[in-house]
Each structure stands twice: as structure tokens, then as C-alpha cells.
Length: 355
Ligand code: GGG
Image 1 (cartoon, rainbow, N blue to C red):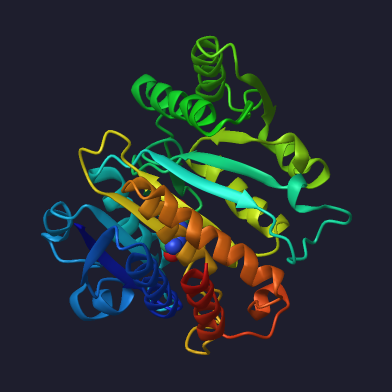
Image 2 (image 1 turned 30 degrees about the horizontal axis):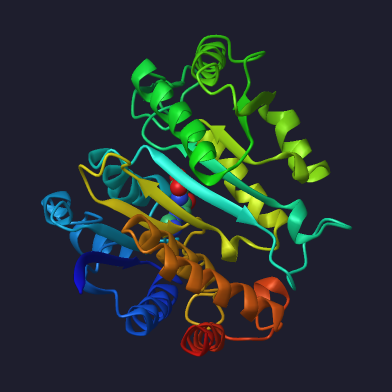
């Protein structure tokens, strides 16, 4: 039986609740299939660590993580630490150092879950947002001078490299081919942002031409957001820059019922470094500690990790169990249900054992 080493970073807030829940599900599927074992090592990094040590992780944190096959992360953020400090102290260094340039964020409406949109069924909302994860609008190039004065100047540069844009757009087309999806849609804003976005559009055309079997289209981010709401059926694979991809991958899951089900994989497709699997949602301090956080985004992220490690059958077992749990109406309050984190987790584990 193959053993895989997994670094676990529960992080902050509900991360500390949903990560152990998802580990229960991963261990259940390992036991049932007998085809792999996950060996975990947990790291107490995050905002609490920051408040004691003035760092989100130790200086050699990335060196430590480098030795693992995958990273399973919960959530990052605490009202006591500015959000840009927590994000740039943990998540972003991991994504960048390990060249996790493809952030895969599936969006799917499950049977039994109510969408805020009228008259939509599960077949209407089933697409994947591919977010560029290493550059774009998330840059540390810029500065601020004359703070607090009338002459204050604040500059934040965006960075779009041919290397990075080609890689993410090619990844999106390859993803469409591999998963049997028919269309790739690009998120742009080339009418208003006149250097980086026309470049993004050009690369999308160049790479898209290499995939004549895949339809392609593009929309400005404002129109694209409206189309998510008015015509979600249109979308199959959506590729966006770091910021646009981030926004769309919150809007999508909200249309599918809740951010509590939004999973993601930060992939280094070349497998030179560990990839990281984490829910899209944050630490949700308002509900942390109440036992009602939705564990599904973390569990689904775990399923994506198993698929990436080569266990498609295990991924399918978990996804079927999530689907059937929702069909039975077992869901947490974010989905208008009454179940606790533990009840949803137990139901999913039970179903995996019964299949
Ligand atoms: N699940 C990790 C987490 O806490 N994400 C919250 C967040 O705000 N992430 C920002 C980003 O992905 O850029």
C-alpha cells in the first residue's frame, strides 16, 4: 500500500474544525479502499502563531513543507491580524515558492441544495474556474509615500508575464480536453485596462488556436459576472487572472448555494513541488467554535488531493457521499440546514462505508 506524506495546516477560525472533519473522511476512504495511506504532520501556523512569533510560519517553513507530497490547508485570517499580513505571510509564499500557478476551483449545484437563483437545476451550474495563482494583480511591486498627507501617493503594479499567462491559459485548455469539457471562457477587461488585458486576450487567442476542438469566448469581467447570474448554463471552464479568478470563484459557489462547499486545488502541475489543497472560504470568525461550519469545501478539497495523488476511485467515493448526503437533506446552516459539522462529516463517512 502506498503511503503519502501530507503537511496539514489547519490555520485559523473554522479551519481548525473543518480540517479534522475532512481528515476523518480521508481516513475512512483510505480504510475502505485499502489502496493508500495518508501520513499527516500538522503545523500550528497561522494568526495565533503570528501573535506569538510575529511571523505566520517559521523562517524555514517553506523548507519544511518542501519535503511533503501535498499540503492540506484550512483557513487563514483573524480580526487581530491585518488580512494582507496573514495572506502574504502564509498562503501566498506557499503558492509562489511551490509554483502552484493553477488554482482549480470547481463550482457545482448539488441536488437538494437551494440556489439563490430561481429555476435552476444541478445541470445548470457545473463549471470550473481556473485562477492564475502566482502573478497578475497580486503583486508586491508598488509603494506608498507621503502617508496621511494631501500629497499621498499609492501605487500597486500588476505583473503579467508571457511565461505565466501562457502557462495558465494552456492549463485551462488542457484541463478542458482532459475532463471532456467543451468550452473555455476567458475573463478580461481589455476595454479599460489597456496593457495587461489586451495582452491576456492575445495569448488566449494564440493558445486557443492550438485547441480547435474546444470552443472559446471571452467577456469583460463586469459582463461575465452578470452572465454568471443570468446564464450560468453557458460556462464550462472559465480562466481568469489572479484577482478576476478569485472574485468569480466566490460568486460561482454563492450561486451554487454557499461558499461553504467551494473547494480548491493550488496545483504545481509539473509536480516539482507539493501542491496545496484548501477550501476557497476563509476562517469565518463569526461562526468559529460553534460546531456549525460546513465541512464540505474542505472534504471536497481533500477529494481533489486524492485525485491528484492518483486515486480517482477514492475521489469519486467522496463526491458520491457528498452528493447523497445533500440529497438526504443533511446540511449545515449556511445551506439552510440544521446539521452540525460533525453530523455532516459522520453522514459522509457512513455513506462511504456503506457503498
Ligand atoms: N482557505 C484559505 C483561506 O483562508 N482563504 C481566504 C482568502 O481570503 N484567500 C485569499 C486568496 O485566495 O487570495
